[in-house]
Length: 481
Image (tube, rainbow, N blue to C red):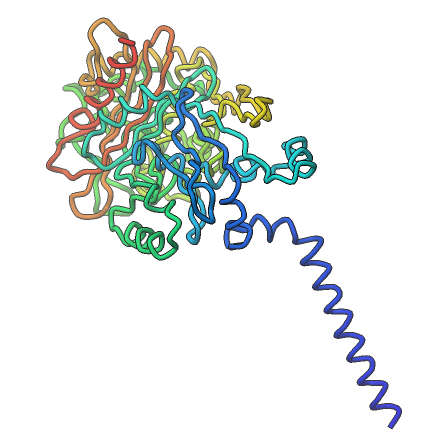
C-alpha cells in the first residue's frame, strides 16, 4: 500500500513542479513576448485608450490618433490613405499590425525600453504612456510625384538619397485604404481585411520590399558590368563574339538579343556597346568567363541574400548558386531564378552614384517623445563598398551613355545629365513582363537614385517604352523644385 501511495505522491509532486515551471516561464521569461504579441487582444484594447504616436513625413502627419467619444478613446486615422499605406501599414483591433505601425509598435505605444522616462512619469501620474512620434525620411513632394508618375500601373518606385541611404519615396501599387482596417468594429475590420487578402492583385503587399519579388531582366547587367570591371580581366572595350543567337549548353534552347537582332553590325561587340544596347548574348558569354563565384560575390556586395531592416523587413533578393552553364548564362541577364526587390535595384544604382560606397537604406529620420526628447535619430551608415571609385566612375559614364545614345533614352531630361539602365524581364507566366528603369541624376553630383518596376505584358514594349518615361517625370519634377 505504501509503494502505490509513494508513486502517486511523486506524480503529484512532478505535476506541481511542471505547473510551477510553466507558470514561472509564462509570467517571467515569456511575459514580454506575450504582452507584445499582436494576438494579445487585452493589451491591444488597452493600447487604444492611450494616444498612439504620430507617423510623419516632412512634418506632415500621415498616421495619427484622434480622440473619440467611446470606450476606445482614440481612433487611428490615415489622412493620405493609399499614398503611404504600403509603408505606414495599419493598426487593427483583430487582424494585427503591418508596416511602420508594426515595426515600431513599442515606440508608437510608449512602451519601448528607450522610453523609460515617459513610462515612469505615467506611472507616477496614473496615466497611460503616450506614444512617441516617428519622423520618416519620405519626402511628401517626391512621394506624390512618384505616385502620380506610376499612374494606373501595377508596380513600384523607390527613390533614395545616395550619400545617406535615406529613402525619399516608396510607392507600391495597387495600394489600399488603411482607414478601413482601423475601425472600432471587429466585424467591419475583418470584412475589409478578407476582401483585401483575397484580392488577386495583392494590394496588402509592399512590392518595393516584399511580395513575390521580380525578375530583374537587363538591369542585372549593371552588376555584370561591375563584376567584369572589378575582376581586372575586362574593360569597357573588351570584345565578345556577336552572333544572332547563342546555343545554351546541353540544350536545344538559344539565347537571343531583343528582337533577335545583332548587337550592332560587326562580328565582335564591346562590353560598353553591349551594355548601351542591352544585348543578352555578350553578357551570356561574359558569364562563362567570369564564373558564378565572381558574379554572386558582386551581387552579395550590393545586398543580395541579406535581410535588411529599414526598419521594415526587406525580403532578400536572390542570385542562385550551384548553377550549370546554361543557368548561369540565363542569370547573366536577370532571368532563370534571379529575383529582386525594387529597393535592391535602387541600392545598386545608389552605390554607383555614390562612388562605389553603398549606404544602408533607412525610412526613419527621428523618433521624438511627447516632451520633444529625441529618443532615436538617424545616422548614415555604410552598408558595403562593392565597387572601387574607378569602377563607379566608369559605370557612371556608361550609364549616362545609355540614356544619351542607348536604349534608355526616354529617361533623358533636357539640360540634365541622367544615368540609367533599362530592363525587360519575362515573368514566365504567359506574355507577362516586368519593365524596369534604374539610375540617378545629376550624373556629375547625384542627389537621387531610383528604381522603377512596372508589371505588364509583351504588347507594351520595353523598359525604355514603359519605365523610362516614368523616370523622366520623376527626375524632371525633383530637379525643378
